[in-house]
Image (cartoon, rainbow, N blue to C red):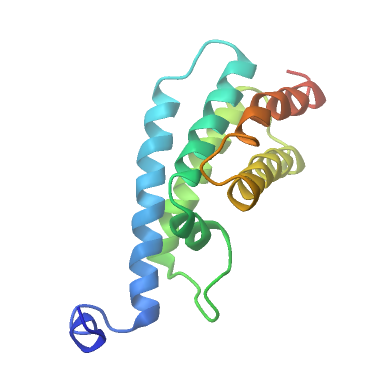
Length: 149
């Protein structure tokens, strides 16, 4: 496909990024929602399961992860419609945490940062490997200990 024919399908390069962003987060929402419907029985197992599901989804595709979670495209900001699946995905995660009595914004933020940091490290330092993936349960357990689970 040549660029002129591509733009007969989308209005601009940013519109293409917007559609890709929405698709990526919609796929993530489906995966995370399915996981949330089938969670294990203990709080730490719930956290581990959700973290592993998001981690594994993200490391499947570096370009998708970067578009979803890093500001790599200068001048691109997703539209409200494209951003909605991201917000919904976070709502699934927040609901699961709230059911574990983890409700403080700083605790949610810390959990997100821990998982995201391990994803970043995996993709940057051992793409295709499992060096940082192997640390995920340990990091989740440290977080769980910190919030009293």
